Length: 108
Image: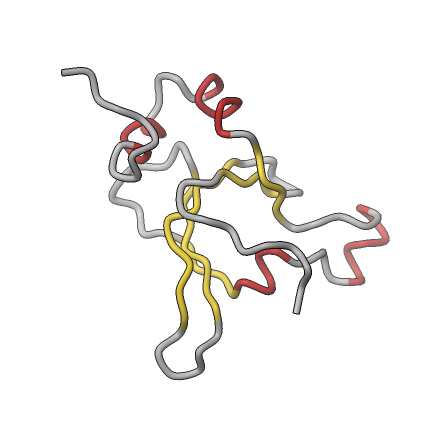
């Protein structure tokens, strides 16, 4: 088991290679295998785009050995401060994704 903690809904992670930002939608268990899965979506993707799902161990894990040589020791995803993302994605669909999670409020 990886020693990094499990991501939580609403947290933002950046991918090591693409530098894209992703918001965690949910972490749950496969109904038959009980394997932990992470559901996440790219911050600036359309709201109706199907989210990605990845095994938790792969999400929080380091890169495979073959890729470590090129990138040294690095995690596949790194947690990012949400305030950084709010500034970077101020005028994007990111806000609309954050509203249901209670992290951003709509102006009335």
